[in-house]
Image 1 (cartoon, rainbow, N blue to C red):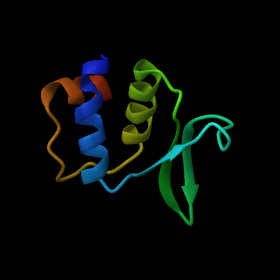
Image 2 (cartoon, rainbow, N blue to C red; image 1 turned 45 degrees about the horizontal axis):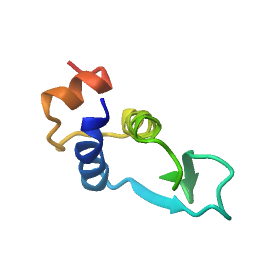
Image 3 (cartoon, rainbow, N blue to C red; image 1 turned 30 degrees about the vertical axis):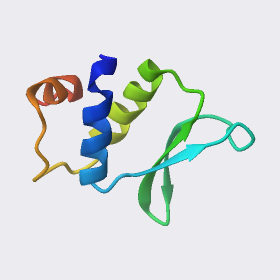
Length: 81
């Protein structure tokens, strides 16, 4: 499933999801937060590709992806058939 990670990063960018990478000294944990009402995915630099993939999927599930092309594998992973 980590082979989806490059696609998920691209889709997140197209969907307007802000992704912020956190350094070792900043991180308390990765996750989706809202900053001034907009979703921001905070990613600790030490996350495994598997965990990062899961975090992207979780974040993208909550976004309106209308008008963003989703390859079949991504649609399936998101649960959108």
